[in-house]
Length: 84
Image (cartoon, rainbow, N blue to C red):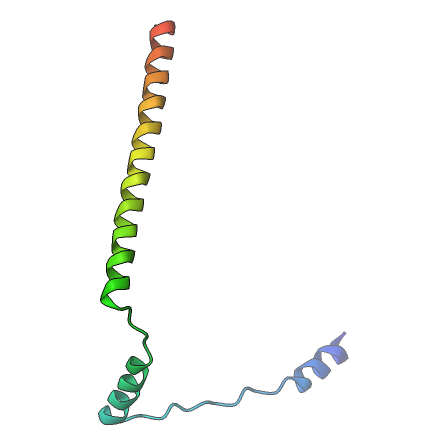
């Protein structure tokens, strides 16, 4: 057992140290601007459509949850009325 452990320890090589380069503010800003330019922005028309869809979907989910809650409350009240 000890021989196997020693062999395993010898096979493991230390990981190379990775040194981070310190970048100047101008280099950082240049890279930031380059990445920012890659963003694909929505057109105002598409943005408006998607915003309206989110509002409508949120409203519909609210109505569905309200309806389910009302039905559950009615059922609970009937059940309590029968038992109490």
